[in-house]
Figure 1: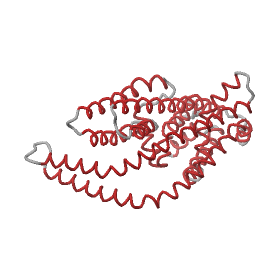
Figure 2: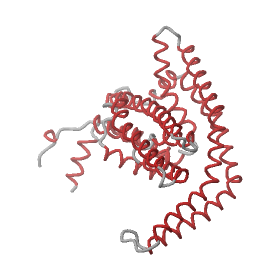
Figure 3: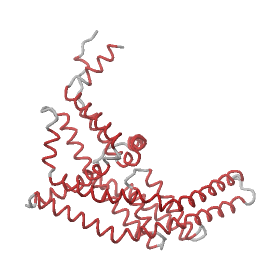
Figure 4: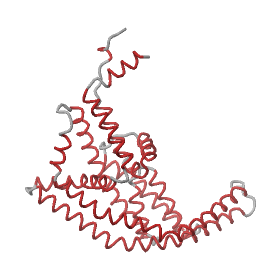
Length: 357
């Protein structure tokens, strides 16, 4: 047993750089696990700065200085966010309030549908299962009412957090973009001079994650706009809110698309009913958008940028989501890519070099 352990240690941890990198990785994971909520504004700023870095580099190649490029990109980002907030947030807020108020009535309509299904002998749906569903819906109605009563009070801390994020995230993002070289030199100054493995991991991560983040942003915008156009054509209520949810759902692979389908179908059922052909048209059109996203847009945007098996992605979403919640789900694919890059670059001693006893 000791020989097996000794062989494994000598094979995978004989390199000093590998040991230092492992200790650094464990420290970072531990820091994120215990301080993730506190450092959330910094993490968001890092993602946004990374997303905009490509545009900064393009402006620099066109002849602009680093300071000018950062200032132009940063100001354009703030203006775009300001326009989006000024135009969309009031609409999204009004539709959210209306949707929350309509949820109890939607559940009542669903109750009526289930009651109609329970009338007579149904060989597919048993009477007991119908009663169980109706009882669950009654409990949900009570829970929605209680949530509405406590919403105004519970939203105060969230609004305060939004204000803090709105100030800290742009501030940190600006300094990350402006002093990127100085920050990177300071961080790498703590690392050993010979770090070929770390450079290989950093290079692979930079190429794949940059394409992933930018691709996800483009996918989110395209899917959101196309979904809004489809919903607006059929006159679906809460088109802007539902399109925003559909666009954001692409950030969570597989699970997001499945989760956002529920409110879309529920709103279409409440507005049109099962007897109206518009209900079928809306659902089919929405499924077509999802199919085009998964089979056309995603391969076009990402290609081989993130070469991960779908099973690996699902496992990463479940694992990292279970550890870090929403942020674990959000960063599941980048974290899985990091694991893949580490496994590919990790130094190994050949077994033939080990003494044979």
